[in-house]
Figure 1 (cartoon, rainbow, N blue to C red):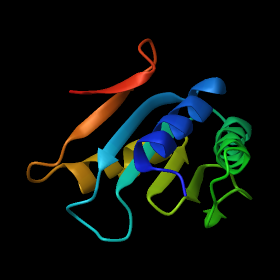
Figure 2: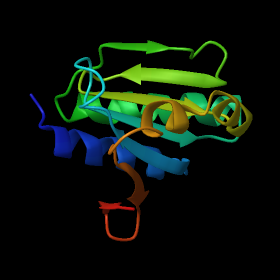
Figure 3: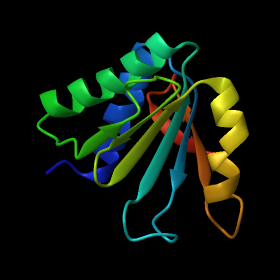
Length: 126
């Protein structure tokens, strides 16, 4: 089983490979026992959103990880990839703005919201 930091890094790299934008990582470990991180990213078209989600799945499986489920690929406006410890939301900008998951999951309490940092290859706290 892949450790959380390794899985998180792999997900971010998979999103960055296909030019995913505005990648955010939210620590949800204090809010729900179901998963520890939520990763949110934008794609500019249905095709890119599906490609981003597909690349995450492919990279995780290639590294020996598992994909529990994937929802929304038919339409491509919002695709959710459930990796167990991490739930990945790939959305078109208008959908992301409308549902505002960052506010919903990260807007209360001492929860840290982190932005992926591509240059360093790691994630830094904001």
